[in-house]
Image (cartoon, rainbow, N blue to C red; front, side, top):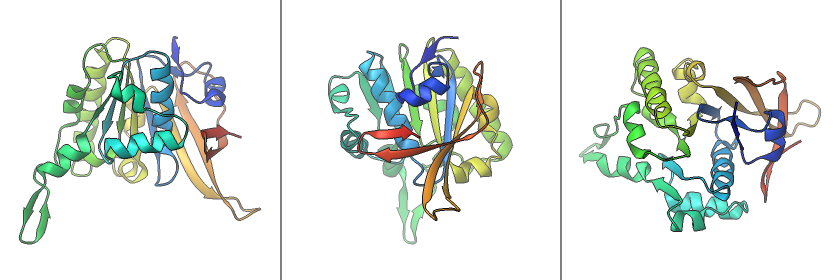
Length: 232
């Protein structure tokens, strides 16, 4: 199977060269585990390799994502400016649709069917990252989520050569009973836990699934430094 780099050399070594090309990869985890940074690594390497990329940003402004990438030495600004990377402002679109009332915010305008996210991905796109998919799942039943998620996967699979990364927060993942992993080709679970010997908090990756890839069922410790993610 053809591979596409994750943007993290040590992770590529463990995945026989990277993520399966043309497939969907799930990245899940709680706040502070580094989900967005995994997406930045993926986009940066893809852009460096000359690929056409799309980021659907559902929780952050493009300026904030660009700034974070620059701080990590994985600057996306030049690719954004020359059009190689398109950042769809789904966060802003959602915010503008919120209607206010005497008592505050109302949910109308926040609901969106997951398959419609594929509208942000034009033909010829090589890499798409949707961060965070979880914000669109909170008002869905488990069955509706499964049906819509499968439909989104199917639509993206018709866009030849497009590799997708879906970022999903741990809360939404649990609410949908982890069903997204069943339809995805690969899954990275990011875990934040306390080392019982040192008392320090540590970040780990658990890779329960990566189709056509021999992987060890182990926790892989990683750090986030000035240069981004490093596996230990």
